[in-house]
Image (tube, rainbow, N blue to C red; front, side):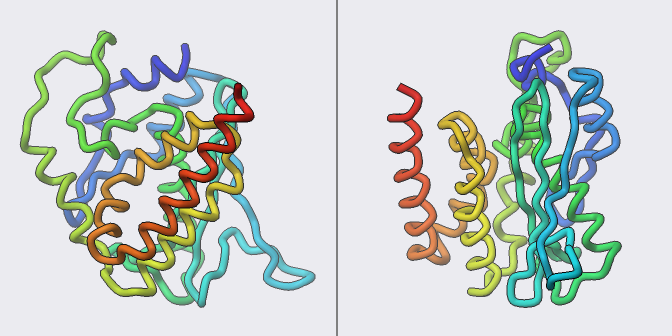
Length: 221
């Protein structure tokens, strides 16, 4: 099995919708990852709070950003996610339960960077053609739900700055053009929303991604 095979897996029966967003069961997703690669691992990044304590999230002005790296087929992919409430707003001083929930969602999103359920983030109804799991014609109804995702965001300057900073922070861990493109694509709905509400922040993220893409392209030649 390969990343291309993961792109073809239909995950629709293992998702649920909350507040207009689609969530994939982390337990099922991880089980699928292990079926594809029994040596698959995921690592929760920790950050120093002081010289004695490590936190499983990055503290940003009192809110938290979790980071998870999933390695499948010997390829690591890193994803980050704010610790958010039921309205998808960053939480001040998150508790252990909220941090754990964000970590598992982040792990699932990192799996999407490997291909599993990526079509959900891309706004599609079904995975790529070519696998036996694709058995029906895409329906427009789920698309309407996914496209509404940006409107559920907290539109405050602090929330959007948190997202933009996280996107830029991710580039420090990116080692190839494919991974950079995949991460941009998986966050495209949020980026489109950022472009409308906070153009300067969007341009900052776009410039960083373009600069790094040119650098990585030269290195891969």
